[in-house]
Length: 219
Length: 233
Image (cartoon, rainbow over the protein chains, first blue to last red):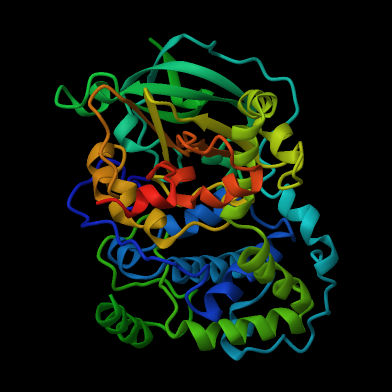
């Protein structure tokens, strides 16, 4: 989706807002949203790509205006209801439906160290043939899907070189919409800054992006 | 930010009582509906937590432990220990650059099969820095949760098109002959910058070295400097 979240290359967003000695969370509610997102994620009713997409579909003006954890909270509520863990009526009333059975939480405090050491779980240990080899010249596809994608606008249609093959990972464009994992190779692809931004960019500088097989064509 | 956010929240409270109500006033509806952002987060978050605990969907002790982990246990000190060992032990550095997961797993910060890590070495000729232009991907196991500036529009938008300008804003001026490599975390690889070891640290222990390493240097928006050098104008 060509949304506001895909902001690489935009200008005039203002100076970097650096906070010295910044706390991990700026209010207790932020920490609770964070923890609830991780703990409910353990139900495996959604995935990281689906969560990212909930933030991308915020109205653009709101995306820029609200805080990061407000984005998370909105995404958490959306997923809890759309994936059937909680009903909208329960959120509105703040109490479980009278007939709701009490569940057993999958993530308990004792399991947390192990869970945090292996949190993302997007790589797949399966044999899939790579379409590209290191050193190969590629062109990023010019695609403009209305759903989730991890191919930023600024790289579409641009020429790059395969730097390395990272192995097989789930494909976010389908995974975010629960249309299957479609596992495929992810490559680190080097794009010269001049290819992306034109002749005013320094000659030796570059941007590396991680790209799935389905984002690339041979060039 | 506070004034505008308050205005927004007032407006949001007026439009919808629940987050699941799509914002129908929004001008351009797509096949997916835009979400509304909840108003009054502190109260609503508290209400949601009670609901989730009561339904047995989350354990409150697990929430407390998650918050405690990222507030007190998992943070840039983890990454600093990795960097210090790489500086102190050339064999470790070789392992770290070849397979970051295996090498970082030696500290227990990730499992060998856990979050896929890649370490990028800064040298006098090459300067690496990391970003996630699309959201906020960041190497949690070694740096903890990202600071607000890393997740915000100014950094995410500009660092890919003008990294040298962004670095200048952080107070780091790179020579023209240094090659700048920006790593946009578009997939599930997580990057950590191995900064240059500053001169004059030959006699320092691994622990003393770790104390010099900053979060910003491991993102690539700063260099590691000795405290005495920092004081110079």
